[in-house]
Amino acid sequence: MKKCRMAGTVMLAGALIGACSLPQQEKAGTAQETEGPVLTLFDKNSERHLFNDRIAEEIMRRTGVRIEVVDSTDNVEEQEELMYARQDYPDMIKVDLEAIYKYQDAGYLQDLEPYLEQLPNVRQMYGEEMLRKMRSPEGELYYLGNWYGEDLDAVNGFQIRYDYLVSLVGRERADSDEPFTQEEFLALLRAFAAKYPEVKGGKAIPFTTCLEYDSSGTLQGMYGMKAYWEQDGRLSHLVRDPAYVKMLAFLNEMYREKLLDKEWVLNREQLFADKLKSGRVFAVACAYWDLSDINASLREQEGKDAYFACYKVLGEGITPDQTTYGGRNSLGWDAIAVTDRCEDMDAALRVIDFLASEEGQYLMLWGIEGEDWTYEDGVRTPSDENLRLFSADIQAAVEKTGIRRWIWFIKNGTGSDGSPYDMVTKYRPTREAELANRRMDSDYWDTSLYMELDPRSGTEESLMWSDIREIYDRNFPGIVNADSPEKMTELYERMVQDMERAGLYQVEEVWTQNYQKRMERWEE
Image (cartoon, rainbow, N blue to C red):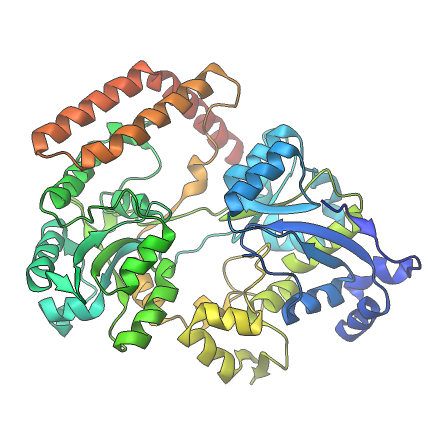
């Protein structure tokens, strides 16, 4: 990987140091007059794009830093693993939170705490409480969260084909925000299977899931489950939660009645998308935004009512205010860090503080003033063309405009003028977003409380946890696919016993201790 380096032989040091305090036009000119320093960056969401679109060019003009995004390849998880294993990573990395802790524990990241005086926008935007939560127990600040802060918008839900649902229950019920009970949902699946045994020459699929999306978050949410089963401050594995057994029974019932896709275990992103685009699927478990491209394709092929809309389904014995579909991490979906490979911290800090600022947020998420948006009667307003593009097809609009291609240090919420930072999802939400947010408005809970509680690598308990996860992953499909309720219960009880023999009680004790320490530190 290229290291952070000085690309020009002659540099205007004063201009570089003061770039962030210059007016916008002067900053643009400064960046054009000198090549400036270069930062390399790995972005797990770059999808092999180079940092050369119009928004990227504007970022580099305003910061005076040239940014080179490392090719993420077609398998971004494998690329990230190889970077870590070979210690061949760039100046900055944007990866999942779980991965950032791995780099942190290995000592590969730079502590930003000593540089906070040079990051005034970071301090203002993140706030002291958020930064305190992102610090390590020892007080170091190794990363900054991306998509951080409280966001009450919907996450998971049951996505049901609207046109099929209308044909089964009528438009009035299909348009209603009233949740479906578990039995009502099963009745819908049965009615769909009876009315549509085949669709376009293929066998219809009443319900399916995808292991690469958070189907578990939807299924657990319908029963009010969170990351752990918590009782009086003690954390236990979800398999011990009585609601978990009800979830297994629900899945097993669908499987035995041939309502669950027989290939559910094999589904990966491409196969899943192909099935949904084929028109054969009635309902899925995932976040509404996972289906944006699919809905755009369905509408184009089959008309405006051919799309998946979000609905709440109540698990057995659960009331609408007890579901937990809306788990979000207030510390962020992922994280960005400066690695020990970076040799020009001044350049890195300049990029970080600009992108974390309101100016940087609106540039990444709204575009360029005068081209993508203007102030109308004092209100920040996107262009009609961009509204049209993003309403029709978000991904196509990103490709055309560059807006929302690069999403770094993003804060949830609104800026000082009241405009939402995220124009695409907040200014004029899509029909799917509007429905999901309305129907799942009481489901938010903060997943950060339960983050990074697993045993530390190299400990005896970490080896136990590895074995426990293997036991679970190996047995779960067979439990769901059991040929009778009795067999399902037998397989479930055997799995729990095997997990206990592998050290589940000891691991749960580590979870509980880590959780209690976190709560003490966060409540100081």
